[in-house]
Length: 161
Image (cartoon, rainbow, N blue to C red; front, side, top):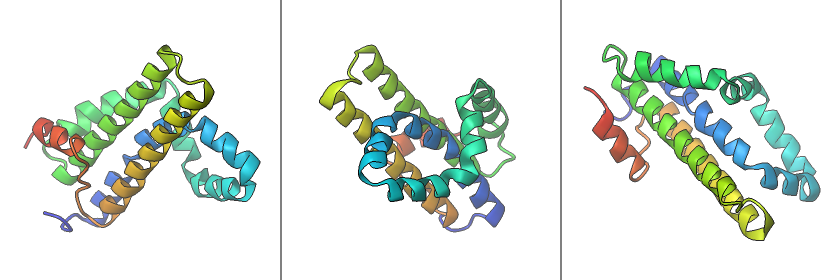
């Protein structure tokens, strides 16, 4: 099944990873503060790369993000008329976004977001989330299923055929 997705399917699958991207960026505040001080040129490059996605990220971080989640779940994931490739990637993006948000929330509730340990944990969460997003988008563009241990297994168990 890898590599057989149409160009439109690949584009929609890659676009679904805006959700975990927005969640990861929210956890990356300390990382961006560090870049602003230590490597402002790198931060400018990252800003230029993310500039086209800013409207989508802002939409995802607003109250409409909840409606987008519900619409994707009801009208995409459960719709067997849509290709399995798109449905797989949308559900995987939702799970990755959910996991990043939950871990970030737990760290905040436990008040572990301050100090060196908190900054380190949030930076690891941000960098791990970004690695997953970059890998998944690259695999989607290539028409391959992004196999993320445990998460992809959970997606396959929940995926209606």
